[in-house]
Image 1 (cartoon, one colour):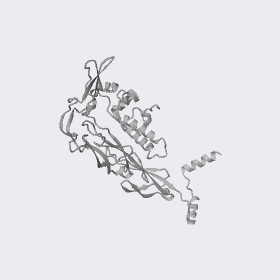
Image 2 (cartoon, one colour):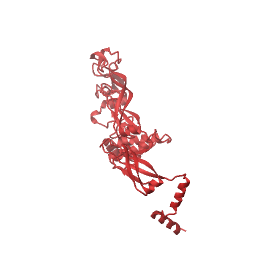
Image 3 (cartoon, helix red, strand yellow):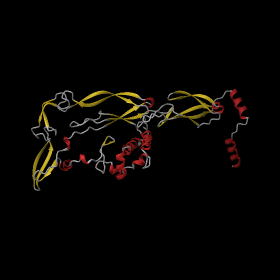
Image 4 (cartoon, rainbow, N blue to C red):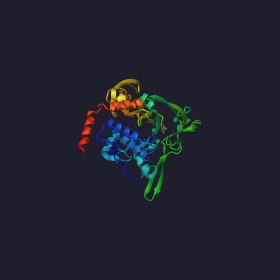
Length: 384
Protein backbone atom coordinates (compact mmCIF):
# COMPACT_ATOMS: atom_id res chain seq x y z
CA UNK A 1 0.00 0.00 0.00
CA UNK A 2 1.40 3.40 -0.94
CA UNK A 3 2.43 5.60 1.97
CA UNK A 4 -0.02 8.40 2.68
CA UNK A 5 1.12 11.94 1.94
CA UNK A 6 1.26 14.56 4.64
CA UNK A 7 -2.17 16.23 4.88
CA UNK A 8 -0.64 19.72 4.93
CA UNK A 9 1.28 18.93 1.73
CA UNK A 10 -1.88 17.56 0.12
CA UNK A 11 -3.67 20.91 0.61
CA UNK A 12 -0.53 22.95 0.05
CA UNK A 13 -0.63 24.80 3.39
CA UNK A 14 1.80 25.27 6.26
CA UNK A 15 1.43 23.49 9.59
CA UNK A 16 0.40 26.77 11.25
CA UNK A 17 -2.27 27.54 8.63
CA UNK A 18 -5.50 29.08 9.92
CA UNK A 19 -8.91 27.44 9.51
CA UNK A 20 -9.75 29.97 6.80
CA UNK A 21 -6.54 29.17 4.89
CA UNK A 22 -7.23 25.44 5.12
CA UNK A 23 -10.79 25.90 3.84
CA UNK A 24 -9.64 28.15 0.99
CA UNK A 25 -6.95 25.64 0.00
CA UNK A 26 -9.48 22.79 -0.03
CA UNK A 27 -11.86 24.78 -2.23
CA UNK A 28 -9.11 25.34 -4.77
CA UNK A 29 -8.17 21.65 -4.73
CA UNK A 30 -11.84 20.69 -5.07
CA UNK A 31 -12.19 22.88 -8.16
CA UNK A 32 -8.91 21.62 -9.57
CA UNK A 33 -9.52 17.90 -9.11
CA UNK A 34 -13.28 17.29 -8.85
CA UNK A 35 -13.84 14.37 -11.27
CA UNK A 36 -16.97 15.95 -12.76
CA UNK A 37 -15.03 19.10 -13.65
CA UNK A 38 -11.87 17.29 -14.78
CA UNK A 39 -13.07 14.28 -16.75
CA UNK A 40 -9.93 14.28 -18.92
CA UNK A 41 -7.61 13.88 -15.93
CA UNK A 42 -7.35 10.18 -14.94
CA UNK A 43 -5.85 11.11 -11.53
CA UNK A 44 -8.52 13.70 -10.68
CA UNK A 45 -10.75 11.41 -8.60
CA UNK A 46 -7.82 10.04 -6.59
CA UNK A 47 -6.46 13.50 -5.84
CA UNK A 48 -9.94 14.83 -5.03
CA UNK A 49 -10.50 12.05 -2.46
CA UNK A 50 -7.03 12.68 -1.04
CA UNK A 51 -7.89 16.37 -0.59
CA UNK A 52 -11.25 15.45 0.99
CA UNK A 53 -9.53 13.18 3.50
CA UNK A 54 -6.96 15.84 4.39
CA UNK A 55 -9.65 18.50 4.84
CA UNK A 56 -11.85 16.26 7.00
CA UNK A 57 -8.96 15.96 9.46
CA UNK A 58 -7.40 19.44 9.36
CA UNK A 59 -10.76 21.23 9.55
CA UNK A 60 -11.59 19.47 12.83
CA UNK A 61 -9.70 20.94 15.79
CA UNK A 62 -9.47 17.71 17.81
CA UNK A 63 -8.48 15.54 14.85
CA UNK A 64 -5.91 18.10 13.71
CA UNK A 65 -4.35 18.15 17.18
CA UNK A 66 -4.18 14.35 17.20
CA UNK A 67 -2.70 14.32 13.68
CA UNK A 68 -0.06 16.92 14.60
CA UNK A 69 0.95 14.79 17.58
CA UNK A 70 0.76 11.24 16.16
CA UNK A 71 0.62 11.65 12.38
CA UNK A 72 -1.67 9.37 10.35
CA UNK A 73 -1.79 6.89 13.21
CA UNK A 74 -3.57 9.51 15.28
CA UNK A 75 -6.58 9.68 12.95
CA UNK A 76 -6.86 6.07 11.82
CA UNK A 77 -9.11 3.65 13.68
CA UNK A 78 -7.15 2.08 16.49
CA UNK A 79 -4.40 4.73 16.62
CA UNK A 80 -3.82 7.19 19.48
CA UNK A 81 -6.78 9.51 19.41
CA UNK A 82 -7.95 7.50 16.43
CA UNK A 83 -11.24 8.28 14.77
CA UNK A 84 -13.74 5.96 13.20
CA UNK A 85 -15.10 7.03 9.86
CA UNK A 86 -18.17 7.19 7.72
CA UNK A 87 -17.96 7.75 3.99
CA UNK A 88 -15.22 10.32 4.36
CA UNK A 89 -16.39 12.09 7.57
CA UNK A 90 -14.45 11.36 10.78
CA UNK A 91 -16.23 9.81 13.72
CA UNK A 92 -15.66 10.42 17.42
CA UNK A 93 -12.25 9.92 19.02
CA UNK A 94 -11.34 7.60 21.90
CA UNK A 95 -13.46 8.14 24.99
CA UNK A 96 -12.83 6.15 28.15
CA UNK A 97 -16.52 6.37 29.05
CA UNK A 98 -17.32 4.31 25.97
CA UNK A 99 -14.59 1.73 26.64
CA UNK A 100 -15.98 -1.76 27.29
CA UNK A 101 -13.68 -4.61 28.34
CA UNK A 102 -16.34 -7.01 27.11
CA UNK A 103 -15.92 -5.62 23.60
CA UNK A 104 -12.22 -6.49 23.60
CA UNK A 105 -12.86 -10.12 24.49
CA UNK A 106 -15.77 -10.22 22.05
CA UNK A 107 -13.35 -9.41 19.24
CA UNK A 108 -10.85 -12.07 20.42
CA UNK A 109 -13.14 -14.96 21.31
CA UNK A 110 -16.26 -14.18 19.28
CA UNK A 111 -18.41 -13.23 22.27
CA UNK A 112 -18.26 -11.60 25.69
CA UNK A 113 -15.91 -13.67 27.82
CA UNK A 114 -14.99 -14.72 31.30
CA UNK A 115 -12.47 -17.09 32.87
CA UNK A 116 -12.76 -19.45 35.80
CA UNK A 117 -15.98 -19.50 37.77
CA UNK A 118 -18.12 -16.65 36.53
CA UNK A 119 -15.41 -14.06 35.84
CA UNK A 120 -17.40 -11.57 33.69
CA UNK A 121 -16.75 -8.30 31.85
CA UNK A 122 -20.23 -6.82 31.65
CA UNK A 123 -22.81 -6.38 28.95
CA UNK A 124 -22.05 -6.24 25.23
CA UNK A 125 -22.06 -2.87 23.48
CA UNK A 126 -24.40 -4.37 20.88
CA UNK A 127 -27.32 -3.77 23.22
CA UNK A 128 -26.62 -0.03 23.40
CA UNK A 129 -28.51 2.58 21.46
CA UNK A 130 -26.30 3.40 18.48
CA UNK A 131 -26.60 6.43 16.24
CA UNK A 132 -26.89 5.72 12.53
CA UNK A 133 -24.14 6.52 10.04
CA UNK A 134 -24.03 9.81 8.18
CA UNK A 135 -24.53 9.82 4.42
CA UNK A 136 -22.70 11.96 1.87
CA UNK A 137 -24.63 12.95 -1.27
CA UNK A 138 -23.43 15.09 -4.15
CA UNK A 139 -25.64 17.86 -5.51
CA UNK A 140 -25.03 19.86 -8.69
CA UNK A 141 -25.82 23.59 -8.71
CA UNK A 142 -25.79 26.06 -11.55
CA UNK A 143 -23.61 29.17 -11.18
CA UNK A 144 -26.67 31.35 -10.53
CA UNK A 145 -28.14 28.94 -7.95
CA UNK A 146 -24.89 29.02 -5.99
CA UNK A 147 -24.52 32.80 -6.17
CA UNK A 148 -28.07 33.84 -5.34
CA UNK A 149 -29.22 30.86 -3.26
CA UNK A 150 -32.15 28.60 -4.07
CA UNK A 151 -34.49 25.88 -2.84
CA UNK A 152 -33.85 22.33 -4.02
CA UNK A 153 -36.26 19.41 -3.95
CA UNK A 154 -35.15 15.81 -4.31
CA UNK A 155 -36.52 12.37 -3.52
CA UNK A 156 -34.85 10.40 -0.75
CA UNK A 157 -35.50 7.06 0.92
CA UNK A 158 -35.61 7.72 4.67
CA UNK A 159 -36.03 5.25 7.52
CA UNK A 160 -38.37 6.35 10.31
CA UNK A 161 -39.98 4.89 13.42
CA UNK A 162 -43.03 2.82 12.56
CA UNK A 163 -46.15 4.83 13.36
CA UNK A 164 -48.16 1.70 14.01
CA UNK A 165 -46.07 0.46 16.95
CA UNK A 166 -44.24 3.72 17.82
CA UNK A 167 -40.96 2.17 16.78
CA UNK A 168 -41.13 -0.75 19.22
CA UNK A 169 -41.69 -3.53 16.70
CA UNK A 170 -44.61 -5.12 18.50
CA UNK A 171 -47.36 -4.93 21.12
CA UNK A 172 -47.78 -6.18 24.70
CA UNK A 173 -44.18 -5.97 25.88
CA UNK A 174 -42.81 -8.67 28.17
CA UNK A 175 -39.44 -9.71 29.59
CA UNK A 176 -37.52 -12.06 27.34
CA UNK A 177 -37.87 -15.59 28.70
CA UNK A 178 -34.56 -16.73 27.20
CA UNK A 179 -32.19 -14.14 28.69
CA UNK A 180 -34.51 -12.99 31.50
CA UNK A 181 -34.11 -9.36 30.47
CA UNK A 182 -30.28 -9.21 30.39
CA UNK A 183 -30.03 -9.18 26.60
CA UNK A 184 -27.26 -11.79 26.64
CA UNK A 185 -26.90 -15.52 27.19
CA UNK A 186 -23.92 -17.20 28.83
CA UNK A 187 -22.64 -20.65 27.92
CA UNK A 188 -19.97 -22.74 29.65
CA UNK A 189 -17.35 -24.64 27.67
CA UNK A 190 -14.87 -27.05 29.24
CA UNK A 191 -11.40 -27.30 27.75
CA UNK A 192 -8.07 -28.74 28.83
CA UNK A 193 -7.24 -25.24 30.10
CA UNK A 194 -10.26 -25.20 32.38
CA UNK A 195 -13.74 -23.73 32.35
CA UNK A 196 -14.46 -21.08 29.73
CA UNK A 197 -17.55 -18.85 29.81
CA UNK A 198 -18.71 -17.25 26.59
CA UNK A 199 -21.36 -14.56 26.45
CA UNK A 200 -23.31 -13.64 23.33
CA UNK A 201 -26.29 -11.55 22.31
CA UNK A 202 -29.60 -13.23 23.00
CA UNK A 203 -30.98 -14.56 19.68
CA UNK A 204 -34.57 -14.32 20.91
CA UNK A 205 -34.68 -10.57 21.65
CA UNK A 206 -31.56 -9.46 19.75
CA UNK A 207 -30.06 -8.03 22.91
CA UNK A 208 -33.01 -5.86 23.90
CA UNK A 209 -34.01 -7.95 26.92
CA UNK A 210 -37.68 -7.80 25.97
CA UNK A 211 -40.04 -9.35 23.48
CA UNK A 212 -43.58 -8.69 22.35
CA UNK A 213 -46.54 -11.02 22.36
CA UNK A 214 -47.68 -9.67 19.00
CA UNK A 215 -45.26 -8.64 16.24
CA UNK A 216 -46.14 -5.46 14.33
CA UNK A 217 -47.30 -6.44 10.84
CA UNK A 218 -46.43 -3.08 9.29
CA UNK A 219 -42.73 -3.05 10.16
CA UNK A 220 -42.44 -6.86 10.64
CA UNK A 221 -41.04 -6.41 14.12
CA UNK A 222 -38.19 -4.11 13.12
CA UNK A 223 -39.71 -0.91 14.52
CA UNK A 224 -38.55 0.99 11.42
CA UNK A 225 -40.15 1.57 8.02
CA UNK A 226 -38.66 2.94 4.83
CA UNK A 227 -40.42 5.82 3.11
CA UNK A 228 -39.70 7.74 -0.05
CA UNK A 229 -40.01 11.42 0.73
CA UNK A 230 -39.54 14.64 -1.17
CA UNK A 231 -36.98 16.67 0.77
CA UNK A 232 -36.75 20.45 0.35
CA UNK A 233 -33.54 22.19 1.41
CA UNK A 234 -32.71 25.87 1.47
CA UNK A 235 -29.38 26.52 -0.28
CA UNK A 236 -27.89 29.78 1.06
CA UNK A 237 -26.37 32.35 -1.28
CA UNK A 238 -22.60 32.07 -1.72
CA UNK A 239 -22.22 28.27 -1.84
CA UNK A 240 -19.07 27.11 -3.63
CA UNK A 241 -17.73 23.80 -4.92
CA UNK A 242 -16.70 21.59 -2.01
CA UNK A 243 -19.04 23.23 0.52
CA UNK A 244 -21.30 20.91 2.52
CA UNK A 245 -24.73 21.36 4.04
CA UNK A 246 -26.07 19.14 6.83
CA UNK A 247 -29.65 17.86 6.74
CA UNK A 248 -30.35 16.58 10.25
CA UNK A 249 -31.77 13.09 10.79
CA UNK A 250 -31.88 12.03 7.12
CA UNK A 251 -28.95 9.61 7.26
CA UNK A 252 -28.85 5.89 8.01
CA UNK A 253 -31.15 4.57 10.76
CA UNK A 254 -29.86 4.01 14.28
CA UNK A 255 -30.07 0.70 16.11
CA UNK A 256 -31.58 -0.20 19.46
CA UNK A 257 -33.41 3.12 19.62
CA UNK A 258 -30.48 5.23 18.45
CA UNK A 259 -31.07 8.37 16.39
CA UNK A 260 -30.72 8.47 12.63
CA UNK A 261 -27.49 9.83 11.21
CA UNK A 262 -27.38 13.02 9.16
CA UNK A 263 -27.35 13.63 5.43
CA UNK A 264 -24.53 15.83 4.11
CA UNK A 265 -24.94 17.50 0.75
CA UNK A 266 -21.69 18.29 -1.04
CA UNK A 267 -22.01 20.82 -3.85
CA UNK A 268 -20.48 21.01 -7.30
CA UNK A 269 -21.02 24.43 -8.89
CA UNK A 270 -21.18 24.76 -12.67
CA UNK A 271 -19.29 27.39 -14.66
CA UNK A 272 -20.69 30.64 -16.09
CA UNK A 273 -20.27 31.66 -19.71
CA UNK A 274 -18.68 35.01 -18.84
CA UNK A 275 -18.13 35.34 -15.09
CA UNK A 276 -15.27 33.53 -13.38
CA UNK A 277 -15.29 33.02 -9.63
CA UNK A 278 -12.43 33.02 -7.14
CA UNK A 279 -13.87 32.50 -3.64
CA UNK A 280 -15.99 35.65 -3.09
CA UNK A 281 -14.52 37.66 -5.98
CA UNK A 282 -15.76 37.74 -9.58
CA UNK A 283 -13.70 38.28 -12.73
CA UNK A 284 -15.09 39.41 -16.08
CA UNK A 285 -13.19 39.86 -19.34
CA UNK A 286 -14.46 42.92 -21.25
CA UNK A 287 -13.57 43.40 -24.94
CA UNK A 288 -12.56 46.89 -26.15
CA UNK A 289 -12.17 48.22 -29.65
CA UNK A 290 -8.94 49.94 -30.60
CA UNK A 291 -10.56 53.37 -30.43
CA UNK A 292 -12.26 52.66 -27.06
CA UNK A 293 -8.92 51.65 -25.57
CA UNK A 294 -7.05 54.57 -27.13
CA UNK A 295 -9.52 57.38 -26.48
CA UNK A 296 -11.24 56.02 -23.42
CA UNK A 297 -14.99 55.63 -23.03
CA UNK A 298 -17.92 54.96 -20.72
CA UNK A 299 -19.20 51.44 -21.03
CA UNK A 300 -22.08 49.42 -19.54
CA UNK A 301 -20.58 46.50 -17.57
CA UNK A 302 -22.75 43.53 -16.51
CA UNK A 303 -22.41 42.50 -12.85
CA UNK A 304 -24.16 39.93 -10.69
CA UNK A 305 -26.58 42.68 -9.63
CA UNK A 306 -27.31 44.45 -12.92
CA UNK A 307 -25.32 46.72 -15.24
CA UNK A 308 -23.08 49.54 -14.01
CA UNK A 309 -21.56 52.42 -16.02
CA UNK A 310 -17.76 52.15 -15.93
CA UNK A 311 -15.42 54.97 -16.90
CA UNK A 312 -12.58 53.43 -18.93
CA UNK A 313 -9.46 55.59 -19.06
CA UNK A 314 -7.80 56.65 -22.31
CA UNK A 315 -4.75 54.55 -23.14
CA UNK A 316 -6.07 51.34 -21.60
CA UNK A 317 -3.99 48.30 -22.54
CA UNK A 318 -4.99 44.68 -22.89
CA UNK A 319 -4.55 42.98 -19.53
CA UNK A 320 -5.34 46.11 -17.50
CA UNK A 321 -8.00 45.64 -14.83
CA UNK A 322 -10.35 47.74 -12.74
CA UNK A 323 -11.97 46.88 -9.44
CA UNK A 324 -15.66 47.40 -8.73
CA UNK A 325 -16.09 47.08 -4.99
CA UNK A 326 -18.97 45.12 -3.48
CA UNK A 327 -20.09 43.47 -6.73
CA UNK A 328 -18.76 40.01 -5.90
CA UNK A 329 -20.27 37.00 -4.10
CA UNK A 330 -22.17 37.47 -0.84
CA UNK A 331 -20.24 35.54 1.83
CA UNK A 332 -22.70 33.23 3.61
CA UNK A 333 -20.81 33.46 6.91
CA UNK A 334 -20.34 37.21 7.41
CA UNK A 335 -22.77 38.70 4.86
CA UNK A 336 -19.89 40.62 3.24
CA UNK A 337 -19.73 40.88 -0.55
CA UNK A 338 -16.53 40.31 -2.45
CA UNK A 339 -15.34 42.53 -5.31
CA UNK A 340 -15.57 42.33 -9.08
CA UNK A 341 -12.52 42.72 -11.31
CA UNK A 342 -12.93 43.83 -14.93
CA UNK A 343 -10.14 42.51 -17.17
CA UNK A 344 -9.74 44.38 -20.46
CA UNK A 345 -8.88 42.76 -23.78
CA UNK A 346 -8.20 45.03 -26.74
CA UNK A 347 -9.23 43.65 -30.12
CA UNK A 348 -7.46 44.74 -33.29
CA UNK A 349 -9.77 44.68 -36.36
CA UNK A 350 -8.86 42.02 -38.93
CA UNK A 351 -10.89 43.52 -41.78
CA UNK A 352 -10.86 47.23 -42.66
CA UNK A 353 -12.74 49.20 -45.27
CA UNK A 354 -10.82 51.36 -47.72
CA UNK A 355 -11.76 54.47 -45.75
CA UNK A 356 -10.61 52.89 -42.48
CA UNK A 357 -7.29 51.87 -44.00
CA UNK A 358 -6.73 55.43 -45.23
CA UNK A 359 -7.47 56.83 -41.75
CA UNK A 360 -5.17 54.30 -40.05
CA UNK A 361 -2.43 55.10 -42.55
CA UNK A 362 -2.74 58.82 -41.82
CA UNK A 363 -2.68 58.07 -38.09
CA UNK A 364 0.46 55.95 -38.42
CA UNK A 365 2.32 58.93 -39.91
CA UNK A 366 1.74 60.95 -36.75
CA UNK A 367 3.81 60.57 -33.61
CA UNK A 368 2.07 57.75 -31.72
CA UNK A 369 5.14 56.46 -29.94
CA UNK A 370 4.93 56.11 -26.17
CA UNK A 371 7.78 56.05 -23.67
CA UNK A 372 7.62 52.24 -23.63
CA UNK A 373 7.93 52.07 -27.42
CA UNK A 374 10.80 54.60 -27.39
CA UNK A 375 12.66 52.51 -24.80
CA UNK A 376 12.19 49.34 -26.85
CA UNK A 377 13.34 51.06 -30.08
CA UNK A 378 16.48 52.29 -28.28
CA UNK A 379 17.16 48.76 -27.04
CA UNK A 380 16.81 47.46 -30.62
CA UNK A 381 19.35 50.00 -31.93
CA UNK A 382 21.80 49.29 -29.10
CA UNK A 383 21.50 45.55 -29.73
CA UNK A 384 22.84 45.76 -33.30
